[in-house]
Image (cartoon, rainbow, N blue to C red):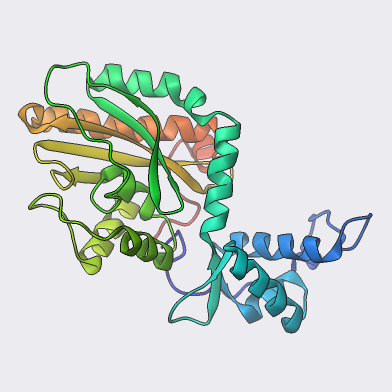
Length: 291
C-alpha cells in the first residue's frame, strides 16, 4: 500500500550494470554476505517496497538460490516479509523500527518543535507528532490546545481510528497495514469508528489521494482531527503530524484552516528531513502518485 499498488514490480537492469552506481561488489575488505543482504534491501526499496524473487535476483545480479537463502534470513529477522497471497517479498517492520530509531537519534522532536509550535499557534488546537514502533503508536511530541475546552486522549492504540495513525498506515504495504490493525484489533471507540478492513482500505486510498487523513469523531466523541505523513530523505513515511479540534469549534472555516496548516506542517518537517519530493517541487507527494 505504498506508492506502487499494482502488484510486484518487474525490475530493469541489474544494480551492478546501472550507470553511475559507483559500486563494485566484493571490493575492499567487506563481508560478501553482509554486502549482498544490504543489496537486497536496497533493491526492494528501489522497487517501491515489493518485488518477486526473480525480479530481485535479476536486479541484484545474484542467482536465485543465493537470493532465496539471504531473503529467508532477512525474513526470519523481520527486515523482509513474504507477501500473503502473492509470490513476492516486501520490506518488513524491522526496517520501519530502524528508521524510527534513527530519527530519534537525530532528535526528530527537537527538529519538529518549532513547526509544532507554529501549528499550535496558527490553529489554537492540540497538536501531536507520532510514529509507529512495531504495532504501537508512540507520541514523540505534543502541544496542548491554546483554547479552553475538553482534552484529547493519547492512548497508544486505535491506529485505525486516529488521523495520525491513518496518515502512516496509508503509505505502508497493504499486508503490513492489515497486520498492524489486526494485531491491535479494530476496536469500536465511538459509533463512527471504522471496524472493517475493506472500509478502512477505502479510507486509506482517499488518504493517498488527498495527502491528509481525517478522523471525524472516530476515536473520541466530540473531536475532529486531521493528520499528514512526515517523510525522510528517502521519501519513506516515518511519522505523522496531527491537530484535533472540538466539534464546538468545528466551523467549515476553522476545519479548513486546521487541515491546511497540518498539511503545511508535515510538508515543512519533511523538507527539513530532506524529502526530495518536497525540496524540489514544494509538494508533499511521492515520486509516483497512486491512482
